[in-house]
Image 1 (spheres, rainbow, N blue to C red):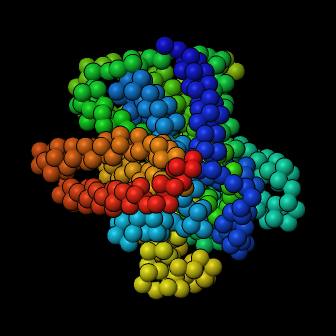
Image 2 (image 1 turned 120 degrees about the horizontal axis):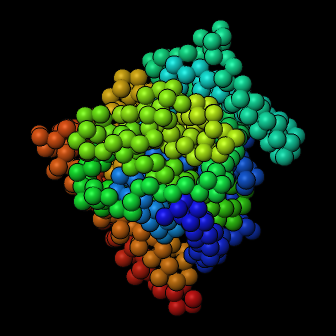
Image 3 (image 1 turned 135 degrees about the vertical axis):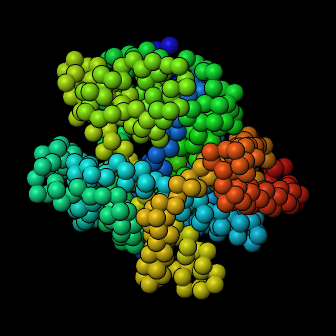
Length: 597
């Protein structure tokens, strides 16, 4: 199997899905109507609710949802072979992820841009609303801390990366102010993009200078700086920092992967990993569990991810200019993210299997596999660092992309440069999800605790915004600084997909209420059935085989208890939803609408 065949076939399939299924969802299922004002117009406050050009919103939304998941997940799942990951990315994105993102965005906009917990309360009742809010607070805190750790380790003692990432902040503020004053998107986009590229390419020259020494930061210092930045991204008006920074970052994200696609077409590398490996039944050095359910837990973003529900019911519904923009921003951005996941999978599987496992396994574990590395020593020498035992997926992506880029004769001597650039690119990729996620956490805190103190619910109340932003940053910042997040990071895979199940449950409820034909609820029920069964089995497997198994390396009673609590919350929400579905199904209004249709 060669890489070009996979890339061409995947992109063609996704374009057809967008044109046909995306249009069906927009026109028939959700019945998007541009004659009605969106929440951004109805509640325009110049801060959170701001009507925004759909391509700027697309850039923000894509930058926010496309974090570590589509980069790292497919790489880790490559231990099962290239085919399971490829199938899940394509099927999961079209049938599950794109539908999930579109219906969550629509459901939030119907409720004036409220968070998913508030939507759940109004659609399913107070019990489901409380359980959804609790689950969302838990998941977003873990997510922000975990993503921040990836950025922290990418920028630790890395002045080039710190400068290139940090310079995007003042550039974004300049672009935000210029666009607001002039309204000229093309001019401000061009200037911003040029400045970002200058920042990227100037980065290497600061190493060894006074500025470079000042930006050579340790992990503890970065662990303080990241939450402080996130506080301002969450508290400042969305047009000033968050939206323009995410918009500009999306140029880099999409640009790098377009370059990777071009590189794949030029080199057409052979996929070295077999379609299936011997680890599909479990016992792999990267992931201990079997291919099902762990393929769908490991690859979240890129196929379907609950984290998208935070953005789709957080910042984005407050920015859409027209209802029809849901197709581009919700459905379309998910499919573009799927392409990112596929390219990450190609970069990983283009490596020799022994090289892949040497990077993603500890040296002790790799010795037990009986494999001999192939190109890894040469790559390590060219890049200038030891690559073995660098688990987690980020280094594998950097090595895979470097391998492809430097196979082009013009770039043959630039291995070190490309490797560092991709590491920096990954940091920028993930940081955009951190600032958006923190702002979403702020909304969640205001909604959740606003039940006890009503003024806190008002997004335009400045003290409430500041308090909620500070609380959100403190919660995940504490976990980041203390490092305790490492003990519960394994929970993220299950809890994230549980969140996606909750999003589909709420989407199914809304569709049953508004759709002309009842059978349209199947657009949500089909992926929900698969995902809910998968999540619960994966949770059960982890609890019995790892968390509550004293002989397992990941033994943790706390993780086991937290997993059980999360799964119970999911069951409570589903039971509440089924009761509501039966009530709607039997209502005379629904029967009349169905009869007329």
